[in-house]
Amino acid sequence: MPQGYGVKQRVYPTNVTRQANSHGVTQPQARDDRRGHTYNIIADAFGFYTTDATGTAFTAMAPTRILDTSSGLGVAQGKIGANSSITLRVGGVGAVPLNATAVVLRELTRVRG
Image (cartoon, rainbow, N blue to C red):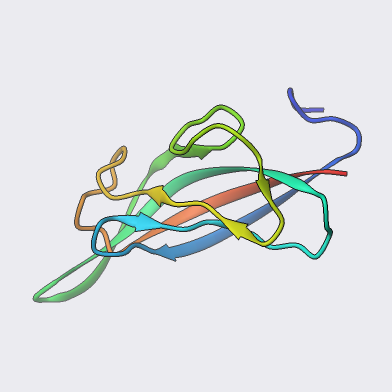
């Protein structure tokens, strides 16, 4: 079992493209109907989109961890509640440029059962 994962925890991996606003910010969410559950979210960026006069381009990159709520990477440390979101700066983080219009993430949501 991976370090830090308990028997009664579930992990939900998701590949997702999240739009970034003009300030390079996106909002990962923990969507769940179970009341009272709390979540840690980990996200690795492995690509981004930019737009210029010629159109939109995707650029792949080596996976880079940009979010871990359990350690406070990218956001304040702490679990988030069900059906809530956090504000995450992606533009200018790691290899993601400030003018990125979207970022491709591999998100892992760890649920305490």
